[in-house]
Image (cartoon, rainbow, N blue to C red; front, side, top):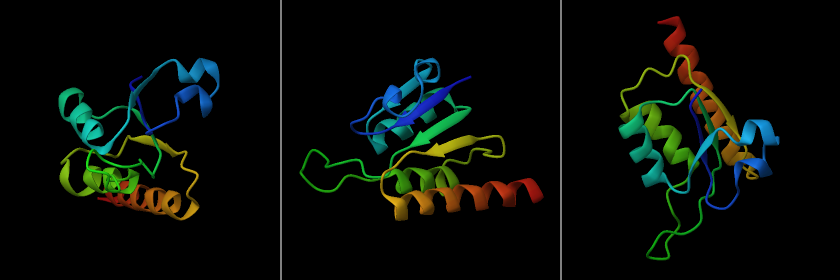
Amino acid sequence: MKKLFLDDIRIPKMVYDTIEAKDFIVVRNYADFVKYIKQNGLPDFISFDNDLGLDESGEIAPDGYVAAKWLVYESGLDLRELQFKVHSANPVAAEQIRGLLNNYIQFLKKS
């Protein structure tokens, strides 16, 4: 099972137990998230953080919600079998990511 962990600071074992944590590929920003999926295809499971710090120019970096929107609106991938978790400490953004992905996946399954 391919598992992707999007977070700018944390490592998987900070969020998951040791057995689960060892199988993740870690990406630290939106650009690497998109690059990984374009090169390797959609993973079976994605764990999302939302707030991804600052970019190279000191501006707020694209966040986990932007990554989720890319999956839904731009990737062209079939997300019906995607499993995901949002581990962000930002409750509003976490709900936005969950809502977007859950609603889109439900839509795809009904189509």
